[in-house]
Length: 166
Image (cartoon, rainbow, N blue to C red; front, side, top):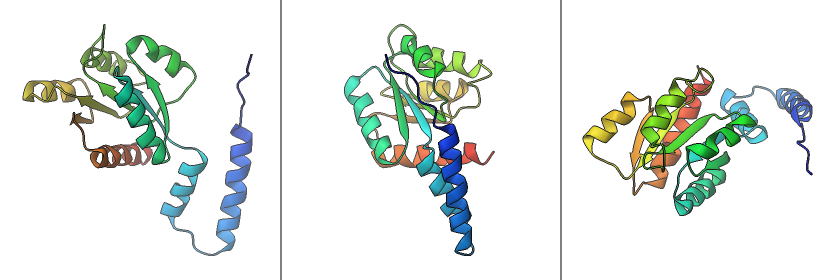
């Protein structure tokens, strides 16, 4: 049986020492400090996608950008993932089994703990009505499949920066 390792105190000590060493070198740019913090405590992205290939590809791409990626195949796996992991951004497929992405988004946006987390839909449904519905249920962006990896990277980066600066 493995036990959960708490590294909070270690991370804080490393951050304090790093900040002190950086300040010894003169003026420190705020962007450098943010980049450092992102490396020490990476932002967490939850990908809810029923297609295993797409889920794995998104995980690989986003981890390559320095994010920590959690994955769920559908709404039934969501609570197990969210119970132990704070999330900074959610990427959600519309065409999920049992509960579709629109329904799941409505439930998440009605939850006080999840309502402020940026939400991006990823969907093959690219009709105007679907896109409008996505924004109506609380999406911050709606990206259609097949998707452009660079657009996903830009969108994730922008939404996480905006949420961080609130």
